Image (cartoon, rainbow, N blue to C red; front, side, top):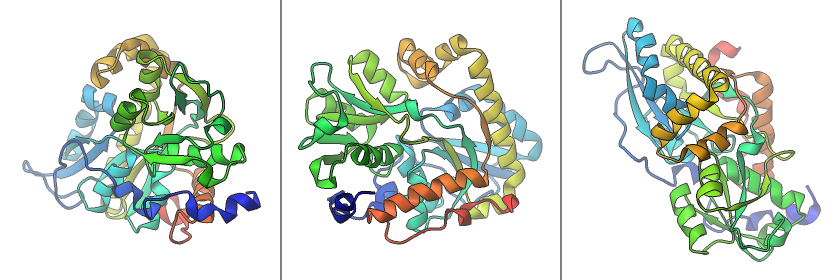
Length: 330
């Protein structure tokens, strides 16, 4: 990092410690409480899943996971969230056992002491998040946002993209004003001109491109990996790793089906997400596929992200991401 970037690191955020970012919002629906893997009302174990608008939505809609887990005596519950950070807060307070999240929220959660464990990962998808401006905006590069306001979700994958875009443009943290908003609020602010640009991920990115004719200025290509991660808690994985392995297998099977059947998947997603089909088609056109168990190499990628946030004083302490590996990884 450049010297002037490091010198100004403390000024990147103006609303308090970013280590608490993942606690910023509440879930759309309250999650079922209880101990990890505890018996449900009908007996047996329970898997409480938190999900965003993504692959888990499709898995939920099909009901195939419940069928796979029935022989293991596992009852599944679902709670939808607007983004990854509030999912991790739910994990921290013991409301869910499993969920999906982007590449930045986990490091903030780990720094704040959440019992987070990486269990699964997707492939890199750098072009599935990006920087939007209104169609009439004269802005054609992030560098032109100096002195302007950029909206994004605090502690999200787009938060890391924001940092990387600042670096690429040789801008100081104080040169751009970050406005921390959840996706729905960010879209509203974008539409009324309260922010000059919006950093967002799919499917919200594609919906804005199609319904608002918003213009894509930059995506994460060459800057970020933008992997999808699947997480659990230390306690849950210790007692229910067999359950989690089935979840990853089912997620990969559904993901591979989407890759081979994009037209049918677009129709199914459009109904489940409640978004126009043409937006889903755009999402799938730039999506990459494949879900697997977490690897040491990918944990090293997460360590680089954590170290970058630490250098900017956005984390209160250095974290060792490898400590959040599941026990079976060795």
